[in-house]
Image 1 (cartoon, rainbow, N blue to C red):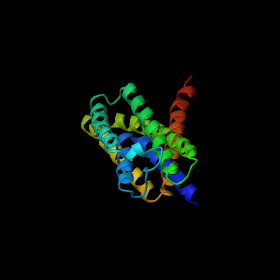
Image 2 (cartoon, one colour):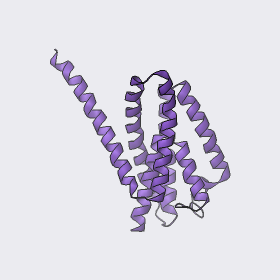
Image 3 (cartoon, one colour):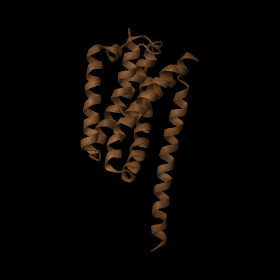
Image 4 (tube, one colour):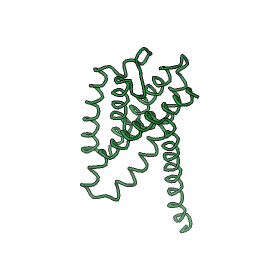
Amino acid sequence: MRYLLDMLQAAGLGSATGIRPFLPALVAGALGRADAGVDFENTSFAFLESPIFLAALVLGVVVSVILARTAPDDPRVLSALSGIGVGLGALLGAGSVDDRFDVWWPGLVAGAASALLASAAMRSLIGRVRTRLDAEARSALPVYEEGAGLVVAALTIAAPPLALVALGFFLWLLLGSRRRGREKYAGLRILR
């Protein structure tokens, strides 16, 4: 049962870093440093709660918010953030499982896969929402994304089964956006 809870926590942390990579990792590292719900100490992933790593994550939050505001549609920035999110999700997932169990690699896979799912779903959602908002509202989107990542990370650390809700939501978002995309172009085929 404990292994399942740790795997759910790994998936939840991965999905949080898939939304935005740095703030959820910072929250997990800070809570790990305080041994509150997650603990990376005495694992191969102890660096996740080191002060230097946490300071680098704070710098990452600041830079990512600035980049998101100055170049919101730049595919290089979006791809970089997605890649960093998948990497951090994998590390946090593996560290979450390594705390209590010797076999940590399933946490690595769960964290990376969940981050990939969340990243794809959020990228699609934010892309659609951004086109409907004015410039001022668009500039606030990165702050909302950071907040969502923070909430998902904190909730899945406190109650790992909530990761199932987050993963279900991201899957629903992704499938819904693909369905809407097919419906959007279905009318164009009729016009031929």
